[in-house]
Length: 251
Image 1 (cartoon, rainbow, N blue to C red):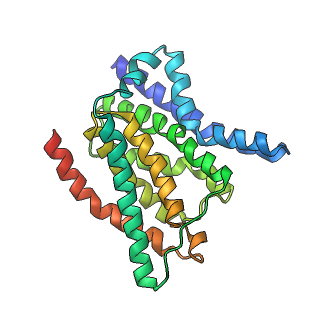
Image 2 (cartoon, rainbow, N blue to C red):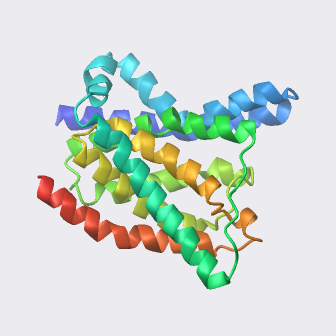
């Protein structure tokens, strides 16, 4: 009982910091003229889940015992290669289908220096918080494994409120919500299949952001069309049963 109460307290504190820190960062960005400082604040804003998790683990003196074991050499090659392949295949296939349906030619997206930095930052910004801290807490609280990605996906979606405030997300909220749920199950598969190696989730987040830019999935790259993103969500949903069977066999 005491362990559960402690976990519940940690969960509340984690969510408070993860949700409030972006709000403070966004407010600070509106008052600071320096572009460099605003970029740093944006980085803090984007990394709020990981910052929250690390702060709490340091305060509880559990950083080494809880987080360090998730960075290991076991299945490291799978933790890097598999997320890369899944992201490449689903996103590339989705763009191919869109080009066929719309009769348009494939045009690769362009990346500015700032966009490249932001995408690279995705390697460490979120997943230590979501998949490295939040999901283990939910498991310890006895939440059934099949529900954990759904809960994490809902929280993950709601956490993006600050990007919507800044018009940084081009996808409608409803579609974005569905995508977060489906992708959370992909993250859960990767974590499970790699023996809880957090590098798999970090790699997938980075690769997903990278390939969506390279394959120009966002509406801004397709004359405002949501179709590429809708096709991507469908492709990811169709992939889930395959991943589920693979995960079941690995138990």
